[in-house]
Image (cartoon, rainbow, N blue to C red; front, side, top):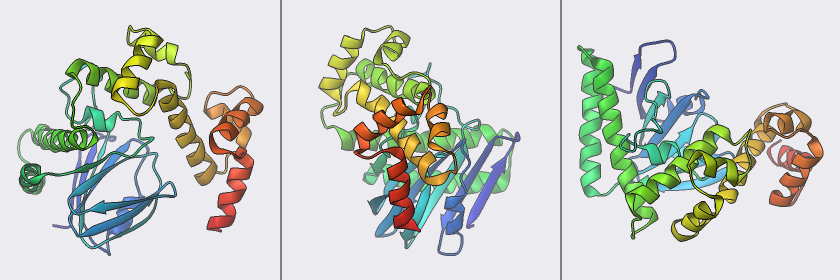
Length: 282
């Protein structure tokens, strides 16, 4: 079957697609509460997201939040799973909750996982289980679908972390980084200081800085700033909000402070950025 849909409560849904050139338009219809992952089953997949281009090899998977804007997509064969956050909510209190590092990564850098041979076999079996469960609609269907989804997210997460680092950090350290990213995703529009997140994690800012310098290629403050910039660019590119309205949405009390921040990161002002890309894509 090309498409399978599960719906329960108004905000709970899971959609599974065998993508082709006819139905690929569904990729462009994500809601803000959706999480989507696209599994390239063909030789190559080219996708443009928020005007950045990505090329996926066979059996690579890219993860998207509902805030991402897919501009273009070219592929031969692919599969897509899309689910609402209420259907499968990652708990920040559960370190064992499947896919937490993928779904709470902040999405300022899109997670892309490459399936190894074992994971690919498991993914194929999980896909078959999805198809069977969607059609049978048996007792405890929601719980079964959540279990299958969790398995796929865990497998993808393992491959994602393996590709990122061969020297894996201690579990407690890895969880702390995931927790920081999770908190940034929730609070970036209201809180822009490392001290706020350090307090939430019961750590000092210096401890966080030292941890990230050892285990990450980005400092905590850079992660916060990158998340703000990613959202700022999306609002500038894809909404009619004024720069002043965007600044307010992102927690800035005045447009001057926001404009200085944006220009310092991008090299041009928000207004110049909007004009530049309006001319490119007009």
